[in-house]
Amino acid sequence: MSTSDRRSYHHGDLRAALLQSALRLLDTEGADALSLRAVARHAGVSANAPYRHYEDKEALLAALAVHGFTELRARFEAVPEHPATTGPRHEDAGRPTDPADALAPLVRATVHYALGHPGLFRLMFGHPCVSHAAVTEASDAALAVVMDRIAGLAGPQHLTSLKIGVWALAHGLSLLLLDGRLGDTAPDEVDTLVDTVLHTMLNTPWRSPTAP
Image (cartoon, rainbow, N blue to C red; front, side, top):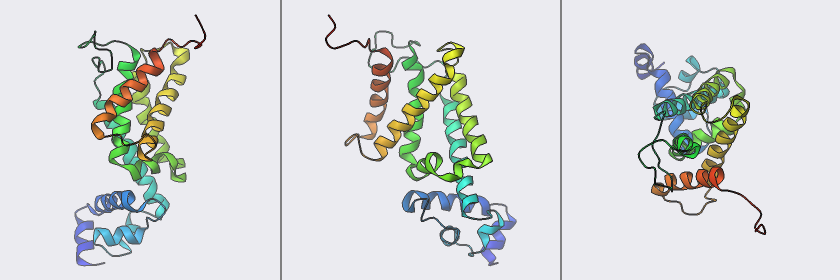
């Protein structure tokens, strides 16, 4: 082991340094191209150093996914429990209103996280490593925060469906934006997009176009 490896390992920050290097490479190279050797090179340590903390590439990817879900959970927890109106309808601005206003901050938190960490987000929701027990636990913990926040929005029999719907909407919008499928959406337009979609989906009185 090199002098830099010994110093990092001695101070207990080698694992953190490797994780940060992997996070940076993930966004530029993608999960398929990521390797322990590349992470070691980026971190400035020997090729064998990563094996002190990660058995193989899959273990490293699982650790990255856990990191992502832990950060996403923290963002959910930072959302006020009773957000004021932020959607298109402002007549009740300044106080909590309908479910769309309560759900929007959670969806926005997910979308902004995806846009800020595109490689990590795709890993968290589309790589086989998510089947690892630690990743499942971290994902469930993040979803538990969402479940807690929506508990007062629907009856017990609808909570699971509502949670799935919110998760699917947040995930779908994130990927559509990441893939450029919604055109050139500027960063400062993302919140408005989320709010408008939620209000449209939840508050539009749908009826047949031919109905009187």
